[in-house]
Each structure stands twice: as C-alpha cells, then as structure tokens.
Image 1 (cartoon, rainbow, N blue to C red):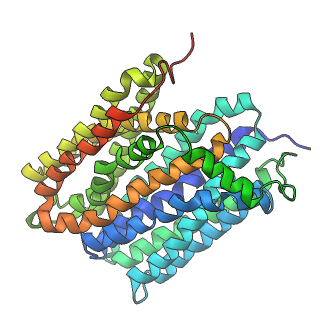
Image 2: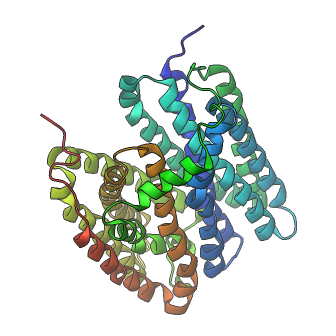
Amino acid sequence: MTVRSPWAWVPTLYFSQGIPYVVVMTLSVIMYKNFGVSNADIALYTSWLYLPWVIKPLWSPLVEMIGTKRGWTVVLQFVVGAALALVALTIPGPMVFRMTLAVLWLMAFASASHDIAADGFYMLALPTHQQAAFVGVRSTFYRFANIAGQGALVYLAGTLQERFGDMKWAWSTVFFLLCGLFLAAAVWHQFVLPRPAEDRKAEAGRMTPAEFLRIFKLFFARPGIAVILGFLLLYRFPEAQLLKLATPFLLDQTDAGGLALHTKDVGIAYGTVGLIALTLGGLLGGWIVSRFGLKRVLWPLIFAMHVPNAVFLAMAWFQPGSLWLISAALAVEQFGYGLGFTAYMMYMILVSQGEHKTAHYAICTGFMALGMMLPGMWSGKLQEALGYVNFFGWVLLATIPSFAMAALVRIPEGFGKKEQ
C-alpha cells in the first residue's frame, strides 16, 4: 500500500473544512446585504445557521456507527459541492432570500458533519507525533480558507458587480466557482486520502444509547458546571452581536450611519487585512499562553479581545472615508480578537480534560455556537432601533457579563504553560 505524505491531504482537507463555514457565516451576510435585505433579517436568519454546529454533538456518534470517516469526508464534500451549485442556481430566480437560505441550511448541516468526520479521520490517519507536527498546518490552511472566502471571493464579487453591473450574476458566478473547487477537492481526496486500518465502522453495541447518555451526564456532572456554561455562553456575548453587523456597517451608506465601502473594499479591509491580523493575534496568543500559562494571562487576553471593539464605535462616530484608516482600525480589532479567542479555546481544552475528551470538546463547541447564535439573532433588530453609534456603545457595555464570568472561573496554576 502506498503511504501518502500528510502534505498531500492535510492542507487541502482543512482548507475544504473552512470554506463552507465562511460561506454560511460570512459570505452570506455580505451577499444578502448586496441584495438589499434588512439588517434585522440578515442577523436573525443567518444566526439560525449556527444551529447545526450547536447540535452536532447529538448526531456525532452516527459518524462512528455508520461507514468510515474517510467515506463520510468524501461524500460530504460532494454534498457541499452540490449545495454550492444549488445556491448559484437559485440566486437569479424568484424568492432568492428564502431559496438560498434553505440551501445554506443544507450546507450548514453537511459542513458540521464534515467537521466531525474530518477531525476524526485526522486522528486515525496520523500517529500522535505527526498529529502534533501538523496541528499548525491544519489551523493555517483553515485560516487561508477564511481569507479566501472573506477576502478574495468578496473582492471578486465586487469586481464582477462593477464590471458587468449585475449583482445577482456576480454572486451566482462566485458560487459556481466554489462548486467547482469543492467537487475538485472531493475527487482529489477520494484518491489521496489514506486508508488507515483503524478507520472502520464501530462494532455493534459499541455505542449504545445508554453509553451515549452517560457521556453527556459526565460532562454536566462536572463541579462548577454552571460557571463553565456561563463562561462558554457569555465570553463572546459582545462579539456575537458585533460580528453580524460588522459588514453591513461597512457597506451601509453614510446617511444610514455606515461607511459606504464598496463590496471589493470590504474584501480587502475586513476579509484580508483583518483576517491576517486575526491570524497573527491568534499565533501570539498561543505563544503567550504557552509561555506564562492560561491563569496568569487570562485577564490581559480578555481585555485584548473586548477593548478594541471601541474602534467600531469610533468609526461609527467619525465615519472615516480612508480605506487605509478603516483597514488599520479593523486590523487592531481583529488582532485583539485573535489574542482573546486563544484564551477561550484553551479554556475549552481545560474543560474537556479526562475521559471522553473528544466528545466533551464537541459539547463545548456546541455551547460556543449557541453563545454566538442567540445574541446574533436579535442584534440586527437592536441595531436598527439604536443606530450604529448607540449599537456599538451597547456592544462595549455587553462586555460586562464576559468579565463577570471570567472572574468566577477556576484555572489550575500552570495550565497551558509549556514544560521546560
């Protein structure tokens, strides 16, 4: 049997994992804003798209019980490719908002299931030392997918709009290109993914309903579970509201309180410069935690995440017209977000320690998605009622629950610190 180098499939696998998420969560927001959908409807309905990631722990055992993780990964990539084609086909038709939203629901469930299969396959296909060696490669190519989705594809959509004057045709073209990319990835992975002997359907009776319920019971029986859940749900409470309105704010006209950027400018400022800063912040945050331990740096990282949200309030107040100045402000906010999000990820790893750490980490990510979904649902209507200046002022006040929960969590001394 030919042994494939992980370089042949790890980068493409995690690039493929990132694309549908950024399409569902970010690209859809920009597209609907271009189509004239209200901020309230955009925030409400695209926030509902988090639901598959909220509840994916409930069906994750099916990936263990039915078929192989390799098989699931390839099939789901074909499903995502088909869903991208359906979005492209429904954009020019009537009821574009409802029809595309329905297809994005399908894509969200396929993407959440693909996450389960791909992460499980990664752990089976590589020995432990290679898993550690390629964890940075995983995260880097996942970030590249975000930059491609929020940067290059948004810029392409904006350029096509300006050149041909047809907004729906531009977005339909973008989704057809994505469809081709995903179908090519599925074919590639069908041939290059290894076939580890451990990747097989679970034995009958291995995952019984009683065992499934026991895993959940063990998680919710943890000491201090109320504080744990409060922290998971509220740490990103302000960011969950800001995130849904960031791109509408950049695109809205100045008389509506926005910055009146063109779509391709958003691709540069938020989708490229901002995401590069986010990645650098995440790398620095990881180094800081490994150097000093999570307990020692928790508060600085929380401040780094939430205080830079003030740049949105400043931009709403002064409405700068310079793309360079806007890009710099977004870079500051995203860099701080990258720093602070590291603390949140490390806390989820801490909570998941012990028996069934994979399943318990999946439960943590479900609560993380729930913490993003619920505040995002009302954020659009709140912004329309308050206006952008007051809304971003509220976002700063909304940091108080996050700080309050941080004061209650208990973190062991030295957790996350690299051993000398």
